[in-house]
Image 1 (cartoon, rainbow, N blue to C red):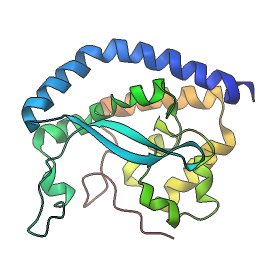
Image 2 (image 1 turned 45 degrees about the vertical axis):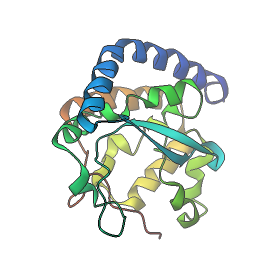
Image 3 (image 1 turned 120 degrees about the vertical axis):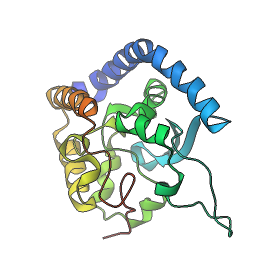
Image 4 (image 1 turned 135 degrees about the horizontal axis):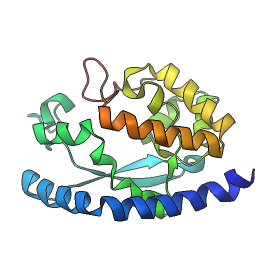
Length: 201
């Protein structure tokens, strides 16, 4: 309980600050490169539910164009993602701005990934327990399949993390994430740029 209530947040602040300093050359290089590549703001911001389902603005590097069809709707992800954006995603570099979310307390380094706000009404009571902890930059589901597993399995892994949260588990997730990112594991699901949309149980 001490780790969950105090230690985890302390670890988040220390590690995210160190990581941001360490990755700052990559951050500013990507910021300028994507600024030129997309001819505009390279930061993507979107409302996501966090701890206790409270909504915050998640930050990511932009990897897709804002191309729309004749009706004004966004084109499918596969048609909007650029080659440069695909490369950025392969090594999860688009997630670097989320270190800012961690520093200000919206997120944790480790926890269930924050999903779309529209999914809130689709969760079962058990699945909604994923919001009993802060959402994470990485998580138990991310090192056990990430976007290559089903939604049902992903939610089971999220709840497992909520029930077994510990310092040892967080360290295991962080180290495994590091090696998975280097290898580009589990970035996309077959037929999708990332993960197919959740449509309920």
